[in-house]
Length: 263
Ligand code: SG7
Ligand code: ZN
Image (cartoon, rainbow, N blue to C red):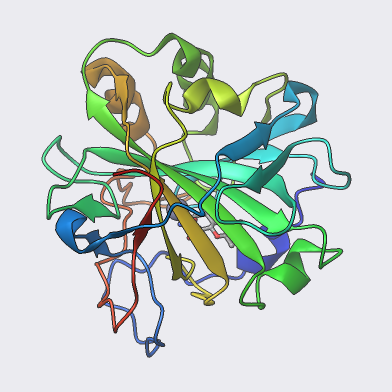
């Protein structure tokens, strides 16, 4: 795949359910967003999302989540506006989820967790020419986070859910094309929180402008059950482990402000 992010984490720790040994910096993610402490910033513009479904390439079980990867060799699927000065290119999206519906998201709103959270990962193509460069720079990445709540079946998600059994085991890859990630965004993308943070898995670099959507999307319990039927383990391993609880523990704010685009 052209999605060069694959190179970065291919040598990642075989899943780190254990508390991380890597010492945190000053802007680690995820965090709890305290609504009454977030600051409305009238300067925050609407997000400009332009995704081309033809850049969608494949799904990959990387042993921690499943990644839907996009061709990021040109500016065909992009994100700009909102808190961003530059143009960012979509590279992949993935989710984090729990073993049950009580937890699973990485971020929380006033301590309230959701059963799952979607991350659309983009890198700054105005300033950098490769994901690998962007991932180590403080303005290198922009990730859109969308909370998932249990409710009615999500039609836009269903094509993806149907493809997941093919990537049940770690290291499996299946061709997956023409998927428009805009279908996974909530109706209202103008209301969001934003803060300066990090990747939530190794290398944990403090490169990310987080854009956390206020509005959640709904998926059915059955759809999330298919996420939970995936495995952390490869086909060769004796003891198979369900892919659940693939979120990082929350990090301290350390004086950061969370801004909101809405009042
Ligand atoms: C997931 O989350 C994967 C990672 C991703 C990581 O484990 O999607 O991607 C790859 C290529 O393994 O790491 C560098 C990167 O995108 C962290 O992303 S996140 O901070 O948005 N959760
Ligand atoms: Zn993530």
